[in-house]
Length: 200
Image (cartoon, rainbow, N blue to C red):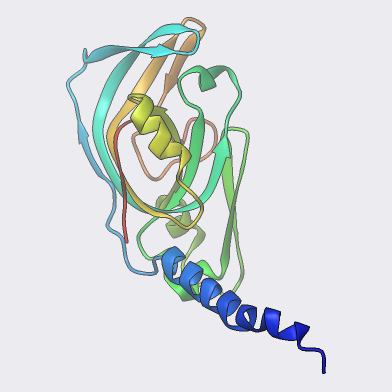
């Protein structure tokens, strides 16, 4: 009798075990309610200079900002603003991460924009989706923060802290939205990130 197959017997048990451990480490996407971002306006005149890939750029601080959300999409950027802002995240909060709601919505990013589609079965209105999700342009405060941003993946439950800003490029101002109810060009948040925390 040929017993060579016995060599592979341990794999029958090891592979499923490894898959189980991997699933446990990855965890399940967060499905609970998340409160709205915390935004506090600042006095005009708060300006800092940051070093981008093409030299120093001045930045006006518009509001302090803290957001907890689930990442629905990530996008690496290569355009002119990428000299200070290399990554965009599509984020969702409120009830949008409930399983019955999330299953009816798809998110996507293209260029510096994001979009979403919903099925007729979704229990929330398009206006609710728009006011509880956002495309956020991230500006890292240092190399360590950039490393943390690079590690963020779809379905991560995160908290970001920093400031909504206006970036004063020589070619013109790139200004953050300061409201959750706008849409279209100029509706994205531009966030100077000073803190990143992975939750769950």
